[in-house]
Amino acid sequence: MKLPIFIFASALGLALTGAAARADEPPAPTKAPACFLVSNFENWKAADAKTINVRVNLHQYYRLDLAASCPALLWPSAYLITEWHGTNSVCSAIDWDIKVAQSPGGIQSACIVKTMTPLTSAEAAAIPKKFKP
Image (tube, rainbow, N blue to C red; front, side, top):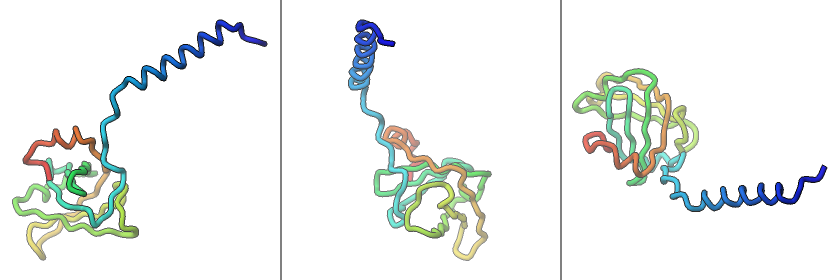
């Protein structure tokens, strides 16, 4: 069955109009890459007992959401003990093996990462200064 020419032309016009409308949209916000090299891990700060903000490569940020509360993150002199297994890149929550301690040789608390989210530059800029690594 052949479509009448005006239906085909209308459909083509709608398709082209949609493409032109997308071309006028602002570019998508820039997100940090999905993966980073462990050697580029620079700093961290806990926003609360279930959220860690991480900085890599100076200006790339990730949010780590934990599976459970990890109150040790809020200790005044808390520091992360990270172990990397397998490759030298971090791409998802499963790549994190985190423990928190307050002093060398002190009690260590394991913190299980549930999700790792790359942040856009706008999301990173919105992190309050006291929680920004």
